[in-house]
Length: 370
Ligand SMILES: *Cc1c(COP(=O)(O)O)cnc(C)c1O
Image (cartoon, rainbow, N blue to C red; front, side):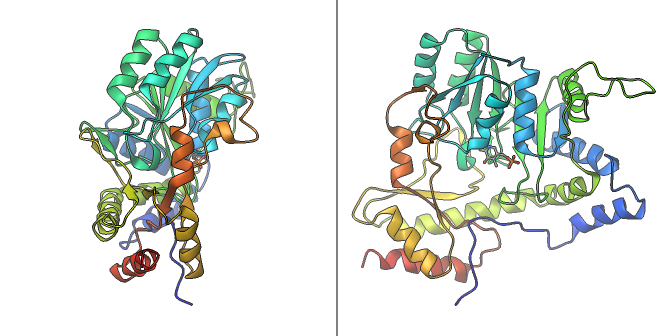
């Protein structure tokens, strides 16, 4: 059996940058707590994306949680969130005892539909916050979403877990909202094995998030707490991996785009295949190359044929309003997210793939049309 091809798996730099920083932490015995790698990873990432302040955390999920808390979301508050996303976008709303209301996708972006969002504000005029997601590294229609959020005076949180390296009108996604988050989970475009980052131009709020993330310890000789705390900080070893990975981010984005363009050139003429949308405002990182199928060949045919040859692929995210846990919450929109789930496939987009690997995938898929 040929070697397995993954959807997206960790890819350390050929230069060994990550280990250099990890070694520095070991050499000084400073593997924990916090330390130089954490501080520098925050600074280097903030510089790279163009934001004032960043807090390195244990996961992207923790970053969303603290963003909601910083935005003042609490018990009973309504938070709008796209239905088509990973559950980690929505779970922290429940951690805060708030209520998610799910919003349909826009066919043009696959992300939050601004018209459905407007509808949602008619039904829930007192909503407290909006979480917008840039799925698969495609940017949402930010100008319209920002306008709507400003008009209704609500906090905007950008879940950019999948879109580090994606630019909207020349500006990094995640830097438009009051808060943005990135993830460094193992399948993301760069990884620290696990971790996340909360970013904002509001330095005071980021300082507060760091305080909550280290058990909310007040300044005192003894352990003194006047607020609820969390153990959400990133370790100094993990941050070393992140510093190294940040150096190869641009290269990873270039390779992801190469993979996407390869598939597009080889597959786009097959009947019923449509590639994920590209908009003029969008410079996507192509975290995953995704297609929809509207002809005789179905997603299950492609996924089955690839799996038989030891190649990983996956359906598009199953919408939250269709999930057993989340379906009790309200949903605003039509059937766009549902159709993307029914017809979509994520093709293997691992940056370690060679041209021979890409050819292997393409040949199997083309074979289904013979
Ligand atoms: C991965 C991901 C997250 C969660 O990040 P973790 O670091 O795994 O907690 C949140 N939202 C989206 C859209 C993701 O893809």
